[in-house]
Image (cartoon, rainbow, N blue to C red; front, side, top):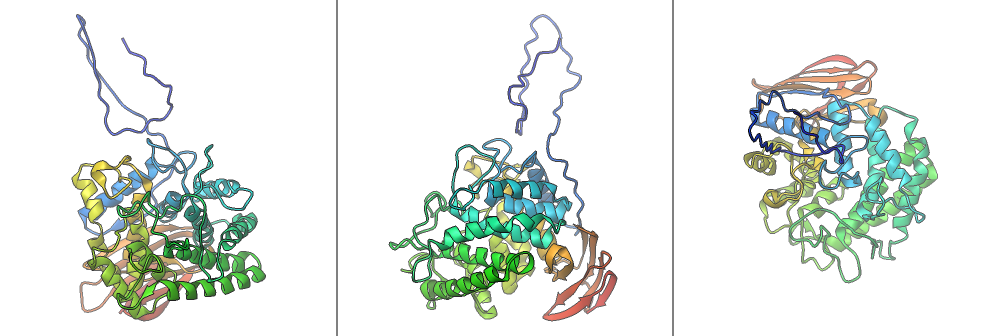
Length: 454
């Protein structure tokens, strides 16, 4: 006799099932019990051969997490909310670009987010949704996501109708820029990260309503908007955004830089400092190479700084790598190791893993990007990936190889750093060229096979 299973909720996220059977006088034999995985049909089209069981485990869990959070839309998690948040989705889209190469769900996400724009121009924080939640930082991340698609997407026609949206978003936030060049008193929930020092993930704000993180967020969005307009839009808008970005960069450096600590502060009174603010300052190009290196060292060594959680570590890691510390990447993964030690098979929402409300949150899958972007060093260097920049951070790896999907095929790399120099084999798709960077020197890459001995 087979009991009926409640199907009132068509898809369920779970880790364990308790099967309780009362047989009474009749014996029972259970011949099978199974679940059916439901999700968007992503395929793993990337490979990493590193002879590192721990890294393999991290990538396996990351891919499972990303897949568990993708159905007809991306979701923050498959159980707790199941909503497509912009901040979460930016990382999820990059996992799709680097691991699968399938950008169809990414295009769907960008379409939906664009459709969520309100009468004042900004997007909602998540969509589809009925509650109209507003997170200002997420709306600015959306402009960056359009730029991400410009660099990694496969459809040159896709962005044609998105520029109006990015302009409306930027115009909305520009209207809150005060005479001193700082973004002030933004309405909505200005979430940045679930940092334990911050109330509801919101960075400290000065009495005048300003905070470095919102200024930096708008600067990054303006920088993305400049390239979007230069390549797909209007030079007039690009010129306007360039002027605004220059002024905002000057404001940030004059208002938040603390020379005595060699760090950017969170607020003008320079009482609070964070990994988040200094990561974004490096990513926005506000530091010299020497400054970036010193800031990066402090971000890792000074525990008095507000610490990035598993979500924002994606931006922290990019900043550390930009500052020249990419060889240390494997040493930055303690929160992922803690997840594994606790028995999780998907990544938790916050770095407080023991108390996290969701133990399957796709924004934690960023190592599935970084293995290819930082370790193997593969990045897009031109719109629609028509050129490649490869700058590996091999760390302690003597031999490592891998491949990742590209709109025109695959990028395949093989590194041997076990001798007196590096031997690199790089295969690029037809008509794709690029640049290889190693120890401060640049080497041209042609389409097809490249062999370098450096």
